Image 1 (cartoon, rainbow, N blue to C red):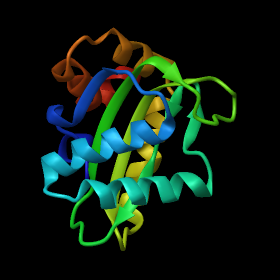
Image 2 (cartoon, rainbow, N blue to C red):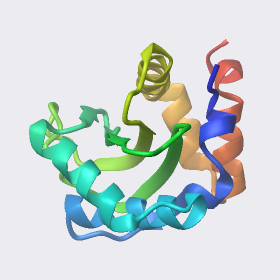
Image 3 (cartoon, rainbow, N blue to C red):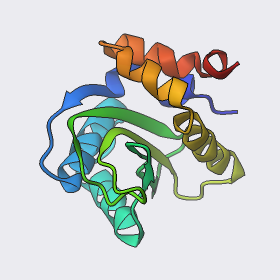
Length: 154
């Protein structure tokens, strides 16, 4: 089973990103993931943007969960970007987004990968998790918050 410790690394965490648009956020996430996992940034950005055009991946409560299937990818990979200031992202509650968790899954993503996506959405639905995440001032601290997720809501 994939866990956040296997799909997210501290190197794929960017804090206090200043972005002028949703497209710029997705491009930055694509560059970050490409650099860490040997992917092509332009292909990742295009896949993320294509998915975002179908419907906004903003969940509400200041959270967006952009995701895409990537041809040739063998395992899921993720990035977390904290935006400062928050950015409009077509959220259902009209709140700007400050937390962006990007998930890439293999082109033929199976139930395991869909469960991972659902678990991440559930995690961000918890106010205690989001508050704890916002108190972290380093990529290592943010990463540990993700790794410790079950302990946060227990």
